[in-house]
Amino acid sequence: MSLFLSGCPLWLGGFLLVILPTLAAMSGPILIRRRIGFERLTTNNDIAGFKFATVGVIYAVMLAFAVIVVWQRFSEAETTVVNEAGAAATLYRLAAGPDPEGSAMRSALDNYLQLAIARDWPRMAAEEESGEVTAALNELYVRTLALAATGSRQQAVLVEMFNQLDDITQARRSRLHLATGIMPGTLWVVLIFGAILTVAFTFFFGTRNLRAQVLMTGILSVIVFMGLFVIVSIDHPFTGPVHIDSRPLQRVLQDFGRG
Image (tube, rainbow, N blue to C red; front, side, top):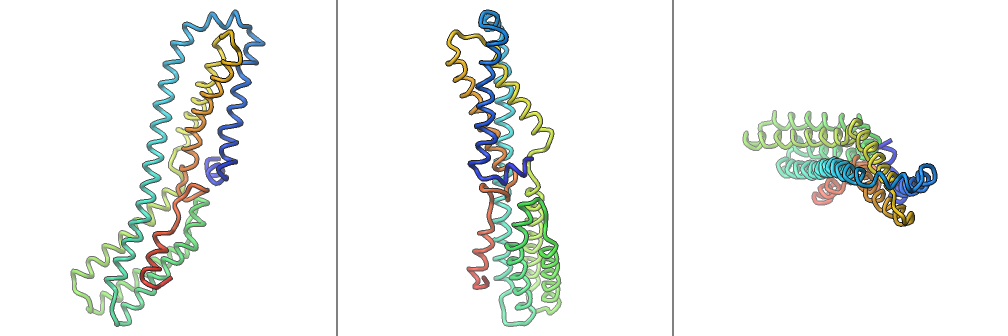
């Protein structure tokens, strides 16, 4: 469900996650007032107000924690892609030279980056990974080892080349992992039921002006479900309209005339 909502257009996600729940929440006070009656509801105001303050604070802390965690992991995914691009650019420079092994290594790096852009990103949007890109990365290791065997590079250069290649491998593994979603299912259950219970708590207040109570419930619902909408929008960093694209890798290819 989280993957589906993350992949929806923003207007559709906002409609499903904010507008529909808010309309349902605004009908709650009207239905409760008709069933229980105003006089009986007013007897709850004092104790319900105290309890609602506690409930609201607890849920606000959980929601804020979830938003911060998801945003941090989203930023981490963005940094991972940038680091992968930086390691690739360094490899291009270290492999420069007229020797055929260096040229073969740069061609293998071209192939890896092009396949990562063309295959990995669409697969990550569906929480999958591309076997073609894995094979291209394996080939890049083979070409790098072949270059090292020629002895045409200094030892320090070779060490740095393999360090950068390892960085590429780790960066790819990180983005594939983050593409599967950031929020665990248990936390989703807690946030959704917490949102429903927090908003539903307002149904049991009794105010003489029913329209004002309905409006206040709607405002609270919008704020709560907008928080959930933000979390859903960035829960899968490589899916949907709010996503991390492959532009850093594309720029590396362009900078070295390989794209």
